[in-house]
Image 1: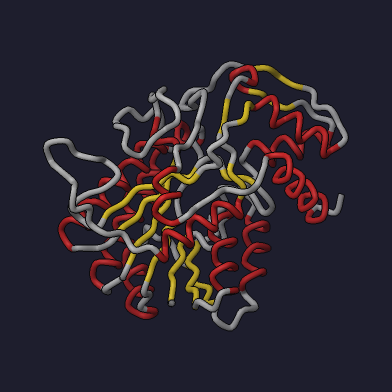
Image 2: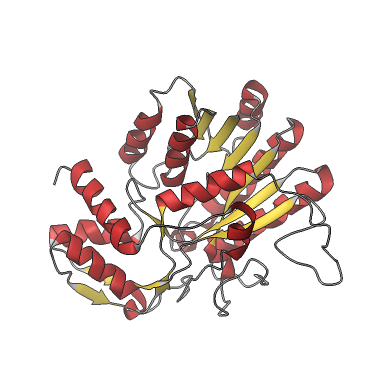
Length: 335
């Protein structure tokens, strides 16, 4: 297939591009290389794919309507995976306009490109953040998610609503994936594992929010990519049993689906830190701090729909995943 991936220099996007290339797909990667975090790391990720003859590297911003029109018209992708987004819960409190531009305006441009160029299937990144104030565990895609606690979460919920509209009006098959705390080699420097590793190795204290009582459904990058590929190959279809009298938020009469992608095994933050300390051979000095605005105490994914529909089965324990990250980190930074 010819697959367009936005956010191709990102953590998930670059790993997904490699897997698709390895199985023989053609990939058009779109990224604007913004400086939200280390551009050098993004360029290093791109270097892993740029040597493939079937990879096309496009420098563009999804919020640039004219640029995205050109990309769709020139490359005519069969399927699209939209992973480009302004990420980060806490940063959304500081710079809300960045989320409107990329996550709303940019996503509208992707939807329009898919609509006008006959794309067979759009898969897009949502987030576990959409569960917001929900406390019923595990989080289910069939639950109501109308109480976000950050603009980032609200923008991802908006993406799901926008996608449904295009599925309903234009018959565009769309699948939204709610990612749960992705980690692993080549990860994001603003995420906890990266921050903790850098500070522990430098002998600096780490900030442990919610006094370490967070529980997160930490999900290893390889398990995430496997889930993305399986859903990309499984084109969303209408649910013939859907009823407006008792509407199911995860399906529709339109070709529309939502799935959680998580490890289905939440881990307390303090245990996560202990595993990291073991692999680094050092103990962290900890600043114990309260819950931050916009954060939620716990995440726990019900992945039963994804298991039933595409046979998804996360296979990587936190112990193994953190160990692989530490090996990569030391190699990449020559420590």
